[in-house]
Image (cartoon, rainbow, N blue to C red; front, side, top):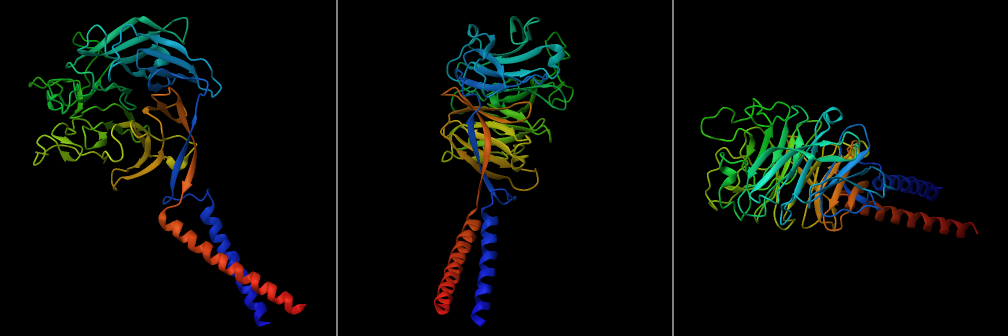
Length: 435
């Protein structure tokens, strides 16, 4: 009788341990402590692009997507995995200088695109290698999938030094103010030899902000009233919104919080992620990330803003800015800034609320040469592969157990196996005795 009770207790305890193991292994039991990996799939397996660098949608009620090819072509196609044709939306390759980090680098659609039919492009012109151009174009009146290449209206000509790198190129409209934000690099050359990023009399090494709807002073744009250097008498460029950046290749707005997240590629020691604010100085080339650069020690950091996050060359060497995830498919990723590295192919998720220390998690160690990220109208997240020309989408998540949970799981398994062995032993013994 006593042995029977002992056997019953062991069976019940074994069942409880099994339940614990089941909960630990259940992929749907996701908590804030769990880490996840992302799975990517080829979003459009029948399509391939030539050096894709930007991915946009027009927010016009259609399901179209637009991909920018570095050599001067924008292609349009339907957002469907079965899509097999990407037609030419705009071809200005005859105007574009595309060596090094130059080319057709950015695209954005007017917030009221349905009515204005305007979109904007950032490129380096072939006939003037010492400039970057921000231009406006119209869509054809008769074909919504065809831009009018002859409709170009140049808004900005940004003087550049004679280097082929650090041209930045991101364009985006602010979700709250409707102004056009423009990323410019320091113009190139190792270490910013001309000191552009700290020189407020140039348009280089900055995030610029202009008003495309209200031109003034014989320009094709206006200056927002709250730009930090409006009406200054020092000769500072009024277009500047923030400065002290090396090459902020990609930036994006969080549509919920309105924060402007920007990556900034480092020189040799630090890659950084910044949240850009009006009038702030992000330090280059006095600092590289949180480290002194010029001078290499003892630099004056007064008024300089450190990055929200940075990593060194052991993790990667060219940061590629992404997006704060706001899609509905993966609530586990909501509010997480997802970004990558061009060289290593790693993709991370950065969680930051502005109060607590940031938390950075490796989401995927891929073999992609990541040139850019993008989102569609549903905020699905896409990754552009520069070398193979394909576009990938986050398809699913794979929950991972942290070290402490893994240890707990292993202990639970060992205990459960021991109890199961004991139960089987008693069962066999009791059977023999009855026989």
